[in-house]
Image (cartoon, rainbow, N blue to C red):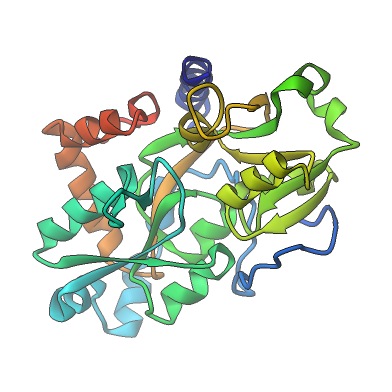
Length: 302
């Protein structure tokens, strides 16, 4: 299974090199999340808008506010990172501490700034409000660089390729091999996610849940027919040798890129871009990626 998803990710990376970086039929949520993006947002979790454009206007915004986010974080001594439970990016290890590719990189970035890292589990739909309310300093959680995200946050350059894929019971996989075959399924998707955007755009019936891990549980329990989650999560959590051995993936719905989001106008985004370049060049980024099996998805930083 992991080899199959690795092949799929390689295809995503090839597509990314060539191209550059709503409301469906919704049932009443069984576990309606509190996540509601700020009104200015226009979330389309696969925006295909280059991450480099996200810094446009940053200097003007910061000058207007008269405040440096970098100075703010250094002054308080902590970088507060908004996350969800999302293996292999952010999840809890055996000792209860947060680990994962994103968690490890966030800790290393905080150390480079001379501050401590603090992880706060958030409702994904509220991520932008959390940023603007300064309850967190960034969103670092396998976040797709969508049109909404890019317009509502100051984003880093893209650092990982990803895709949204359909998860179904393994014994039914042969019935669902293309988008046209999905119309009669009831999906579970994380509210405010790229998965929700994809099923909505296809006008499929879905139930929003709090996290992608909850969407997997819905399918495993039989309360939903299928789920749409990130391919990187699927590689870690679905198929033979995982906790969801009876589930598998079928249709790839898109290709996308991950980035880290800060408050609009934040100078921390450019600081992180510099850190990404340094950690890619010294090999520490790829070393961390290999720990969690996501090295095939890492985007060269330069």
